[in-house]
Every structure is written in C-alpha cells, then in structure tokens.
Length: 186
Ligand SMILES: [Ca+2]
Ligand SMILES: [Ca+2]
Image (cartoon, rainbow, N blue to C red; front, top):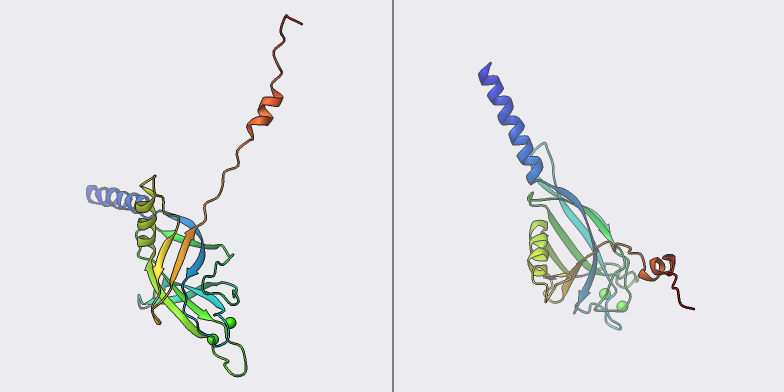
C-alpha cells in the first residue's frame, strides 16, 4: 500500500517536472539570404528554399526528415528576401532540427533540373539559445541568426523571428476624450 502510494507520488512528480521542462510554443520566422552563388549563365540565380524538420518514428525510433515548407522563387537575385512567414511548433530541449535547402529554379528544356545553391542544418535549441544570448545585450540586439551554407560553400541564410506587434492606443485619443477643466476666468 505504502509502496503503491510512493510510486504514485514519484510518477506524478516526474510528470510535473516533464511538463515544466518541455514547454512548447509556436515559433514564427522569415528567411532571407546573402551572397548566394550564381548558377545561371546569362543572369543571376532564381533562388527558393525548401524547409525540412526532423520527426521520430515510433516503430524503430529512427530520425526522419519531413518537408514542412517552401518559399516562392525570387527571380534574378543573389540576395533574396522571402515574404512567407513560417510557423513551427517548438518543444524546449528535445533536439528538434531544421534543414534548409536553397536551390536555383531552372525550368528550361536545356536545363530542366534546379541547381543547388547550398544547404544547412541547425538544432532548434541552438537557434533559440543564440537568439536569447544575442538579445541579452540590449545595446546590440541581433534580430536574426546567420547560417553559413555548404554544398556548395558560399552564401548565408538568415532566419529572422517574427514577433507580433502589440497595438497601443494613441495618446491623442485619450487626451481628446478627457473634458477640459472649466476655469473661472473668461
Ligand atoms: Ca541555373
Ligand atoms: Ca536567372
């Protein structure tokens, strides 16, 4: 009886600790790149990014990659900035990974296969740590994380967190609503 009670208390405590440590929340971010290689002969590259994340299969505990997004193509630029906002459910401390594959769109009959412009992987815990670490210095906040691309070696991919702006009431409105105090002199 006492043994069962002890076990129940230990299990409940463990669940509480796990729930406290593994916090999840949705990350939002945008992508841009700098100094991408040129993979076209007569014009700059036409880059786009494919986004991958790791998943676990329960059967064999094998780590898999799964595509979870793709940007539009930005024509003829080596320094693109993509408009899409990507969302990702992050679980603190669980070694989730992102993989980014940057490609140059080639859709002509002469060259039907897209050229690789670089790839990179990052542990999402590292991304979060770098953001917090960089932002701890209020004088020099870093608003993005720079990831160096390889295969081929060259440019960088920038991951910029998207933070929701909190709307504030304009001060003028509240000033207008407040009636002016009446004065005795006219
Ligand atoms: Ca090309
Ligand atoms: Ca081009």
